[in-house]
Image 1 (tube, one colour):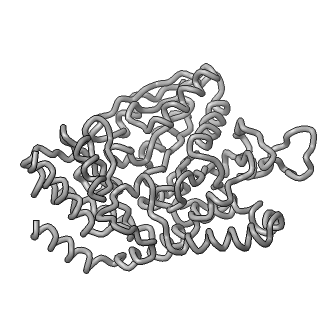
Image 2 (image 1 turned 180 degrees about the vertical axis):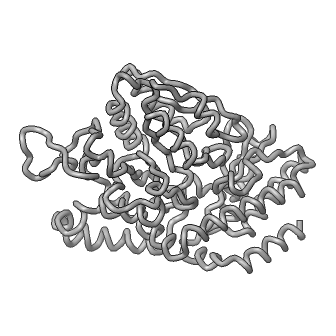
Length: 406
């Protein structure tokens, strides 16, 4: 174990992003936090921003802050995420609702645009539950047909699997860029091209990739995308999601939740709805200003250090986990569930063992925080800006100790 800790210390000393860890609020007593792919740690700057928002923007400026900044915040912040994390030109991204609601709005709009001649939604059985449940609900509402892909759970959706499901009846393909369990990185450019070749639209879920992997939505001609902000974008618990709609589709798509904030003239309070232009039309109700406060600081930090460097460290942390599991945990029967290839793996590594449910409970009691995924997986989240190699090593040593004690 001393060798593992020594190697982690050397990697931390050479880490070009090591200084970023000091920008996060300290977590007293924590040994290792490896669940940042579910809830990211807060930045010191975010704590200051929230206090300033409450004391000044809300506490002093009060209702005037809507005119001064808040009315445009969903669009301005959406453009920032688009610029820094999505490879998206301005005017195509917006922050507003929860991931579930944003996904519903964009998928429902795409199904309607596809029309009765293309009633099929293609999706996979390994996708995050929200994606599957939302699609099921839309199918019940509209009569759309669900076409289920069944990828290898240890890998993920591949272009050949998608190609086999595409027909002249395909309307929309809904997939995740990074699989929430295995961390499999889908071939976004190739799959998008296949879907377009079949005359359909593609909607990408970026929840487990935004902020750590480039997606280059404009360059790859993506139609639609959604993603959350409370993982790698540091928005905090319940922070709102973003939606991306390529400019070429904005006039043709009509989202189904028509609220006052998406109206062309919100303060006219007229008798009927008239959608605003561009991404304004994809806003529904009053946005969560407090919920958006934490996002911008993390986006600023990602821009400062560079998304490519964040991605590089995510890959390196994953490689460290896999090599260490092979070294100290494989003899206990622990298996690596995530892809071993760095270019096919996102910013977490899932490992499996029959005893991992009880092991996870014990780890939490020791202030080592990963998360558990059915049926027998521990998912080690590797947030590159806040995670050190040393805390990863401590988590792996703790797992080895629990398995050794039986």
